[in-house]
Amino acid sequence: MNILLLGATGRVGEAILKIILDKGLNLTILVRDKRKIKLQNAQLSIVEGDVYDFHILRKLAEDNFDIVINVVGANPLKYSSLVADTAKSICKIFNQNSTRYIAITGIAQMKKTFLGKISIGLLKLTPVKHAINDHQNAYNAIIKSDLNYSLIACPYIVDGETKGIFKKKPVFTGGFKTIHTGDVAIAITDELYTNNTRTITGIWY
Image 1 (cartoon, rainbow, N blue to C red):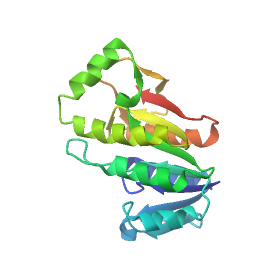
Image 2 (cartoon, rainbow, N blue to C red):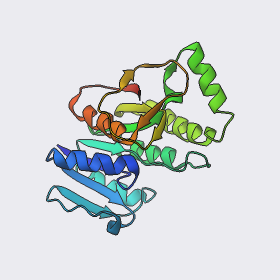
Image 3 (cartoon, rainbow, N blue to C red):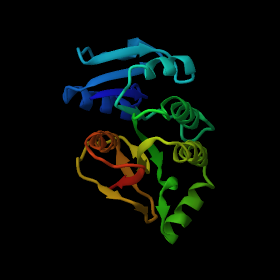
């Protein structure tokens, strides 16, 4: 299995990197600064560059990755289009081949109960609206593409001990929910071994 990971220096990305290498899989990561990666592993290839460099992404696509994992992120309380811009580039580059796309999205992109809709509506009145909008724009691009995607919908990601046990739901039922970084990484890497196609799954405690 040949995997490309975007966002490897973030909290979730670092956890995913370790899990994948522990499984002995071939992993390529794109990072702006190689010095931030302290791990050395024969299965790990590090490419220095930026997700905004379309030519680098196109060059990487020539390696015919089986899976692209996208966990790039920005400050959820400030305006950013990083998630959407990265997703749009991936859609353009990988849309015509069989590469599978696994990524984080937000709970706002899930199907929702009435209470779930109210909860999301309230969140849109807070600075979290910036993250919601960024993920929504990414989601809109992905579902219009031909990508074989699996999206893991996360509520507020907090630091804490990895539990290894969490709920997986197809519908957001509302309320304030959290998930720890390590468990997001587990949910993402669990998708490597499923046949899920064009799905979105919420995870929380």
